[in-house]
Length: 119
Image 1: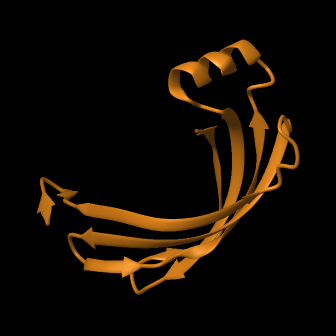
Image 2: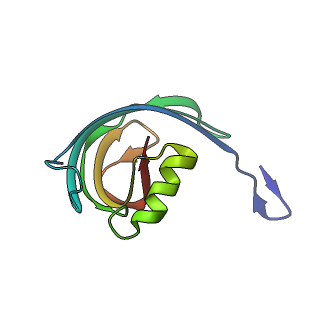
């Protein structure tokens, strides 16, 4: 559909997945914690022109977490007392998921950075 020269599009995406992860954490206050994981996702998408479909990407990832508790122990104790957060990390992860259907192709590496906390 075209309205005043603009193409109208609509896309809905819903995702559900499973992830199994192993942390190479060998002692309690380990500053750097590497990890590896395997992942499967079920993605449902609906587009205005192509209709609805499902795609199931799978693959693995690896990353490195940096323990924040050792930088500021007082704040870590306050987090535990207030929210029951045992450990806080900054993490970086490289993920490779693969899947394809007639409309969508997923492949290649993606990079994620963020904050993680353990209860």
